[in-house]
Length: 301
Image (tube, rainbow, N blue to C red; front, side):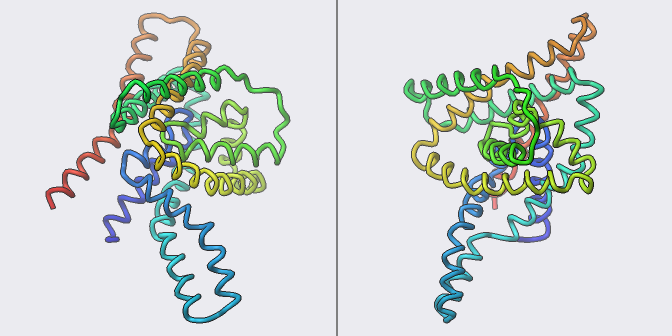
């Protein structure tokens, strides 16, 4: 890749990271609409395949096994992964401070902005569905019911232990890799979101929490990548319908939180909420506009 391509990929990672911090839009959605989603899934799927090749080389130590190992390493696409995750990591470390402040000071308006992002991501997912036959729409209804079921779950008063944090990392990264489902939103439901924001706010004092969460996330990524690859190869349209339904159904939680955060819905408050909703809609659609421009440019060349 050229320096400019590395920079664009890094910025895509930054945007993914920002969205991963926000309990509304999924980093997987950004990867999907910017054209790197399946490349990411393919690269992650190459990790489990590399393990037997490594052991084969350690056992045989010949030219053939060495070349097999090198091909496996090439399939990982390390320059792609390192650049992308550098952008994601940068955004998460910096964005966590800002999101914590905004949710603490302007909760209703921040959540309304998130709702706009969610609606945009759903519209974008829907635009990528090629077949809208009734049988596929039924899967959208199933997704909607699942999303509503997920949304009405009230976080239990569970002690936040390291095993629970590990489980949170596993589940949230699974959600993050699904275009349309927010990993941060899952953490919000589990009651882990604010605790992890606090940990990221002071990473050196909470390094054990970050490491345990990270291990869970890595294992979750390796697991979900194979599942996603199978589902999308099996029936992409139905998978996208389920995801779109899930997102719409799960909107209940931020809507209820906005209602609880507003003392009185005066005309000025309603106007501001509407403004932030529109801004969220616009911001959520920007990646699609950029992706469309990149496609048009590549076709011309």
